[in-house]
Image: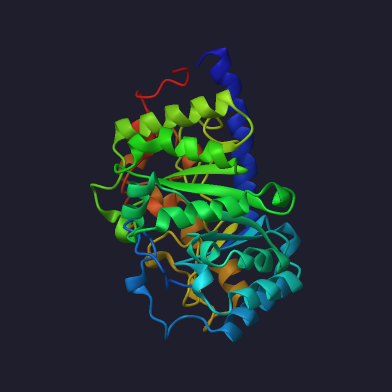
Length: 371
């Protein structure tokens, strides 16, 4: 190990020690809430597809409010970096404004929303109502140029409405009131569109552009959809070049994987580790509670209809906080184990095996950090 790597290793071990302390204490700092699986689009890569939605199982308004009150009472919500409402499409819930208002009144500060933009584009005045009720950040999905985006989303005209919505949330008058994000799910079908999507991003200048590799869950499990190693490399190089060439828009690899010491920090402004069940809670539309909502239901730890939320958080989640069971297959002899601990939970199959390792299958001996 040369001097530079020795110094880098020292920094990463300090980070690891802080991480392990957080695992032990597991403070609740992030909540991702799949508030519904109902949706007004039919996206081919959806991890929470509408066909798995049962309206009779969905949490009712009174149950959502009760859960919000329990969280506010039982946890230190001043530590929350965000509570993010996602779906499905959150804005198809008729009570969504009421829910936002309750969350705001309870003292939650960073309330964020992930949306496909359809409802906001059709009813622009809805944006101000959302902001009044405490929402401080909105993410819009843009997955390609018009033809590609509409094909992804399963509805003709989805792109035009998404662009209308992006225009609304990036309005300069909202700059200090709303954090605007464009999310792009990167797959085999749009990897060659990144430059064209970047042109769109530059035009609107959101605060952030997140490039999220397609993950094998829900409709996104199709092998022909998931990125191949060379495509990962091309995406990494693309992100790194943009991050180095401009600072106006925060560009990052989202929902990622461990990339190794040489790449971590180059594709996002932080060192990655799966936060699911450590400091992140995922709440499903039917009250299920897990690490996040992009994980197989095998890893659900309880349900708010039958279990106390604090009891679940404090006494369950062993699969999220004890990493030893993950040390199988490629992980057994991996020299990155002390930092990665078996990769993201969304890559764990229901039987516990790892579906894909980005570090070993892509990064190791493939990507030069100086390329």
